[in-house]
Amino acid sequence: MSEHMKNWLRDLENALSKKFYKDEVSDIVSYYQEMIEERLSGGEKLEVILEEYDIKDIVKTMTPDVLVKRKNDTYPRLAKSVKQLLVTLLSTPLLIPIAVIYASLLIFAFSMIVVSGILVISTFVGFVGFSLDFFTTSLSIPNLMVLGGFSLMMVSMLLLASIWIYQMTIWTSKQMLILFSKIAKKAGETQ
Image (cartoon, rainbow, N blue to C red):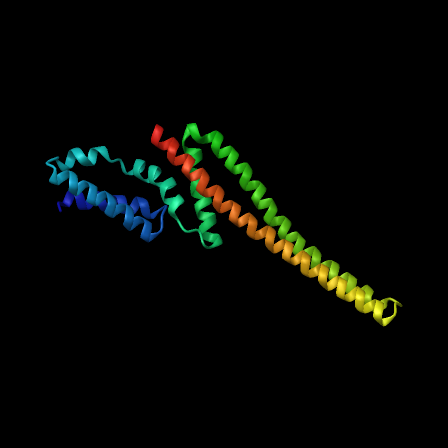
């Protein structure tokens, strides 16, 4: 491998490292290295090959493809992927309307996460208020037991509802990421 090719691959790796995880970077670099070596074995000159591959374009065009394949198993990874897709969509003039739709859906998803958090907080505040009222009431023991059981059941149901809303919102966000990444990839292929 020539020094010129090593430098180009190093530059590609550095550019990719700013946006992608290590395993993704190594996959992309090895893909381009293999492609270049194949073209070299076909008799093409290295300078001609490297002129066809602009590193900035590679990073931009690989972003949707990487985001579709990426396993967003934690919230920070999902947040990074969402941000990368939004930046990619906004950086391409033809995709700005799609970016606006995606951003609107993200705002709705974020509001659902806020609703989930507020539901948890209001459940605990309501339960504390009910508990204080529970001890100051003049109801009979059987009535208090029924009322206490009912309140615990409602707290459980509200907490389960908030967990379900949160999980559905995260799942929906992942599906939107995949869908809009595919749209961006197809739009990038047609340009």
